[in-house]
Length: 228
Image (tube, rainbow, N blue to C red; front, side, top):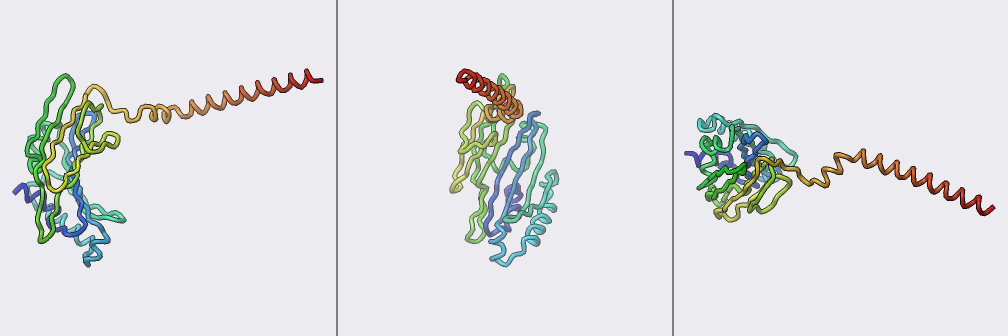
């Protein structure tokens, strides 16, 4: 039944579908579980499908699913895509592990180890797919966002503090990430320092330019007087 829950989001989507599974952990170690399923509007139009009718139907199905009663459901209408957003908040990562009705279908094995202000998340993804006629639809991206300094990870790409794993050809993936809860993520510290102090730097440049201009003026005046 839980496997059906996950694919209620995408089981009636046949064209241009993209599904991402997201874990967003904030500085208080609270967790937001977020699934976003989007379809390409042009692909829907080519199929003669009204995007508003499609999304509202999906939302209605989700709202009638008892196992998703604790999840918030929202519609998404962008210029290029449309779809649904399903989310739920948890008190902490252990609360998420124990009470999420979706994560067990995403992960075959999800472990958390806390030691000396370090948290390690290790997991193996399940083959999460749904056959619809000749179409194979699957969750193809897993994102984990953390507000703390990363110690190690095996993500495919990192964008600021968002770690991304791509699921290719429905193959299981090992996911590992360790972060320190006593050290917040600072991003690009050099760039942040420049941006946070930009007015100070501009002021210093102006003062230096003025001083330099005055020195040059006195030097030119002295040179001119000496030539007389």
